[in-house]
Amino acid sequence: MRLLSFLNAGRESWGAVLGDGQVVDLRDAAGCDTLADFLASERYSQRENLVAQGLPVGLVDGLTLLPVIPRPEKIVCVARNYLDHHKEVQAIGIQGDLHEQPPIFLRVWRSQCAHGAPMVTPRVSQTLDWEGELAVIIGRGGRDIPEADAYEHIAGYACYNDGSVREWQFHAKAICAGKNFESTGAFGPWMVTADEIAPGRHLRLITRLNGREVQNATTELLIFGIPKLIAYASTIFTLSPGDVIATGTPAGVGLSHTPPVYMKPGDLCEVEIEAIGTLRNPIVAQA
Image 1 (tube, rainbow, N blue to C red):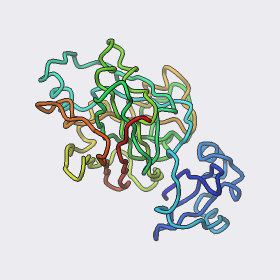
Image 2 (cartoon, rainbow, N blue to C red):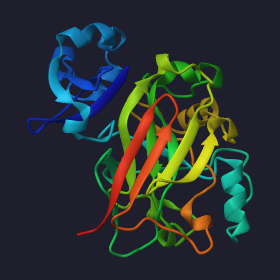
Image 3 (cartoon, helix red, strand yellow):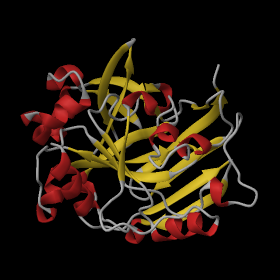
């Protein structure tokens, strides 16, 4: 099942995408204001039955979408979680050892934008780089989650573009500054529920800039797999329904090119993940 968030007559809502692209608004039928609320509710297990009670609102391409989870409590991101990406940044002189534990950082929700919405190059920089990633959406929260139980806590998966403002990222050893400019992290177009993707399945991820392939890898190459990321993060803080874990990007980022290539106004960036869909965003300059 594909679930997404969108505007319906100016009101934030959420619902399901049917096979023909029609969207059914489920907010009132489920009695949950947000998709995150729904993931936490007892009605989530009845999601297939709710569709018949929903309100058809048109084709997905005709709606104004929101980030899949518009205001997650936490967006946990993982740095250098593909070995090929680790090697490519080392090759251009950015040093750093492989870590024994996942090197995580946090994004704020205002840094997100939806499928179809522009990713914004900030006026202070021209180095907005792409990072296609698989996002994991937490369904059942918890603290100290064992790796063996991690998949039971996943509600679904989505595409993410963890855009990086590179020179701000390197202002300090902590990379948070370059990862939190508003509307630089794209998230969408929807989440595919976990029952449609077998635990541990390797998914192919492809990123394109203006139709040209710039990243192509599978999640088999993750250094720290999804169960480890969930277990590690939940050791630090309680994971809540709707929390997002962006699992890292493979090789092929613009920083690694000679000379570097960055997204600029007028570009179009796409992140396609097998069994999920394609996240597509135009690039604009900050007004």
